[in-house]
Length: 384
Ligand SMILES: NC(=O)c1ccc[n+]([C@@H]2O[C@H](COP(=O)([O-])OP(=O)(O)OC[C@H]3O[C@@H](n4cnc5c(N)ncnc54)[C@H](O)[C@@H]3O)[C@@H](O)[C@H]2O)c1
Ligand SMILES: [Zn+2]
Ligand SMILES: [Zn+2]
Image 1 (tube, rainbow, N blue to C red):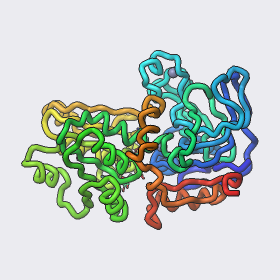
Image 2 (tube, rainbow, N blue to C red):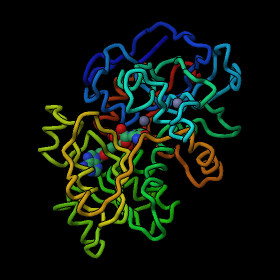
Image 3 (tube, helix red, strand yellow):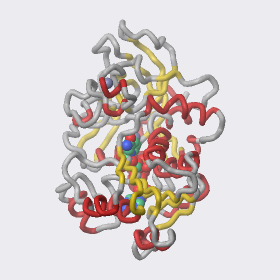
Image 4 (cartoon, rainbow, N blue to C red):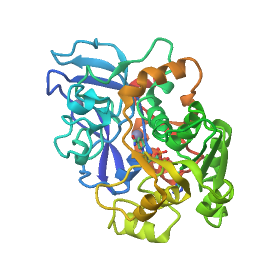
């Protein structure tokens, strides 16, 4: 089968790989119909995530048709068209039982900090992902969800990650009616977080990034105020200035390890890899939230220590909430929001690229060429 193949930092290509096989009675084999590239894949692509092995296939946002089932799978049938949440979750461990499906204790034998994630290095379990024609889906009865009748598959594929992550970013912010919410990052996740902030009662939503077409998109789609941090002398001073010197009620970090904006953070976190990523957006979030406010982090960082202003966290009495999104927990509500038109995720999809051109797709998304917000890879069988 065709599959994306990681060859080392900034090098991915399409290759022929063996078909995945059922390895456990709770597995399914799914024929992929759509798979996205996520900002999280860029951390792998750039070589920032430890133990990202040459030969692995990335891709944790995908839909597909069930082709084979292990003998213990009960809820799925051959031929079902499913959306597959990015978290691999056992459904029964102490964390899954609390709805913390992103923190499953069973699905990742390589680490305890995070559960398994499709196509996300051996630190997240070493599973191959969905940027391929076929993929093995473990615990097939737990998270994969049949795409509801009438739902556009483009909406469905974004329910595997972007929509729940943006929604959870807003949810973790504990937004109160009328709150001012600042979202750092106008990638797909930040844009969705800004949109969802209104659902929790925000009174004002501000997005900060440095890519004009993304800021423009956020202004229309969220809708919100959106500013280029390069045109602000200091984003923290700007946010304080526009909130009567108090700071924002809630700040969301939807940037993570690849943040621009600080030479020191870029050198330490992205060039020398001496910390778990460049924490510029997180710095700005901590410093521009009001005293007693909440910082919600969905941006991904590496496992090693990162230089952040913890003294300011203490002195300002800030609450920090962070996690991988718990997709399965949020799906019932978010499917409803898509079906009723409250959320329109497919509007984020700007590029539909043949799977065979996966290396171009990474280059376009990574370099933010051609006004790219969200690219979807289409395997050959899904294009006929
Ligand atoms: N927690 C989760 O469950 C989860 C799920 C999906 C994605 N993520 C993470 O969320 C983050 C965003 O994902 P995405 O797909 O939107 O990525 P993306 O790379 O498309 O977007 C990131 C955006 O941040 C902007 N940016 C860079 N430095 C900035 C700064 N200092 N301040 C403000 N903006 C800045 C970039 O210009 C870019 O537009 C990534 O770190 C990704 O790994 C987390
Ligand atoms: Zn993702
Ligand atoms: Zn579990």
